Length: 173
Image 1 (tube, helix red, strand yellow):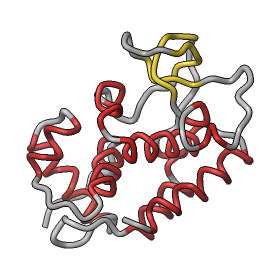
Image 2 (cartoon, one colour; image 1 turned 90 degrees about the vertical axis):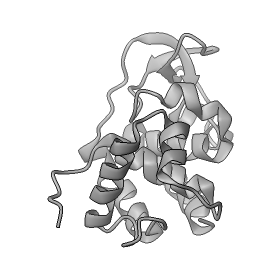
Image 3 (cartoon, rainbow, N blue to C red; image 1 turned 90 degrees about the horizontal axis):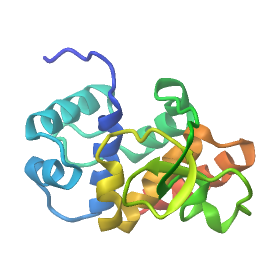
Image 4 (cartoon, rainbow, N blue to C red; image 1 turned 45 degrees about the horizontal axis):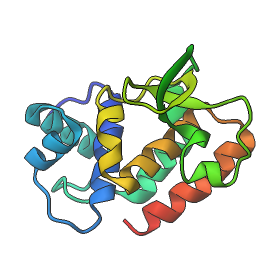
């Protein structure tokens, strides 16, 4: 049995991508290509998630209740985010859909730093470095990552909205 040396941020990204696949058949290489990560790292991440109980023993179906619990109650402690300097980037957290539909955006705009970004805001370090390059290709995946960032940096009201939106999306996974 493999040893579990703790979760890594890319583990969450991989689980969210599996959720975004919905019922689509996928292989590890598909995850690797879609997230721009090595196939061996995908395999290691899936093993860590299996040991943690976040994915089933065949490493094909996310345990959505466990994932929801981890994201809501543990994520901001394991992978905290501190808003950084004002930069150009891609909106995230409550500055992106679906959370921005509920929050009147004032001064606090959050972005993942990206030269291709169209918004200026406080930078938030993404869970994985390739996120700003890949989120435009999959709307559900982008929404899940924005919701997760809201949980990482949001205030109480924003986090409560994020929990509801996350639950809606995971329920159909």
